[in-house]
Length: 146
Image 1: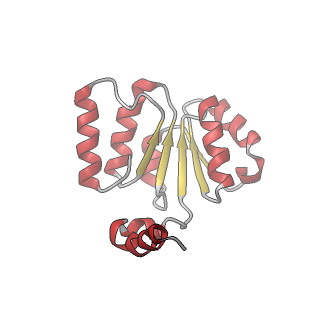
Image 2: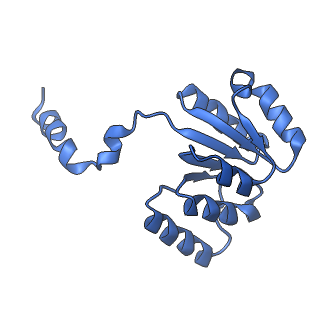
């Protein structure tokens, strides 16, 4: 073993945040905006062993197509047409993935962060610098990852 490897392995518990050591835990994830972009995120989350809890889209046809595409998890996934109801009702969620039209990104992120959920959002996250600063401050205060 090289000296550098030994030092790094000994120092890792002192440098890395404690949350990293619990990183092997499965996440309960909801997906908002079930168009083409999000389908890869759903597939990847399932491949990694995470739980897809809910799909949300204003278009019921998109929800049906997404459930048909992901047949292996379709029976256990709940569907919503309003992201506010999703956040309100799904108390076991850890995170949301957002791939809606971009003018909805900031409002949905704000609602999710206020609910204590971690957020992965397609770009652009916001349309203005003020929105970005507001989301950054809100995520810091809520202690969630965005």
